Length: 215
Image 1 (cartoon, rainbow, N blue to C red):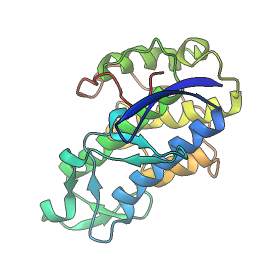
Image 2: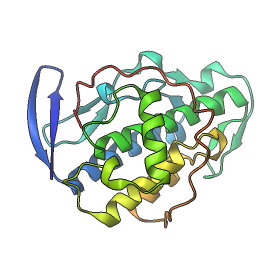
Image 3: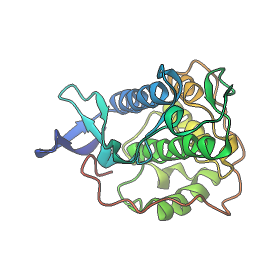
């Protein structure tokens, strides 16, 4: 078990002792919300555009709620291009700019996923975090990457394999959220893969100190 500093509804902070299964439930809850936005909205995909720890609130039952939609884009309304089917079979904009926005959300989710389990010494800035985390994943240096109290080896392999796909430097290779969710739930085997080149890391905005959790 490890400790998590949490702000509930933005008003107060408390330190929680949180287990690995609860962290997985939080990750799955965020993935479910993002899948709905990307793939299940009746009038077209919504891209969050600012998916960070400070925009995830935890309820009293530790169920995550995605907030901070100030940068969100409703692609169906903003794009006039025709809709095609993505690799998961869901309708999505076919123009490259819209696809890139969706893949940026998936990158941000991968960072959130790693931050939820990783060491407290991890860099706060997302660019520095990716520079720090990618070589550790490639070297399988999980004792450095993750909180030392995490002992669910199989679970950490699922987290690592899923996050690796989400933070792939080739945005087109990142999975859709339906597949991400299936990986996390163990519905699809997510065997480890060779980690892609760490060159040309995607541009990400700096992340301020999180007011959700301090890992």
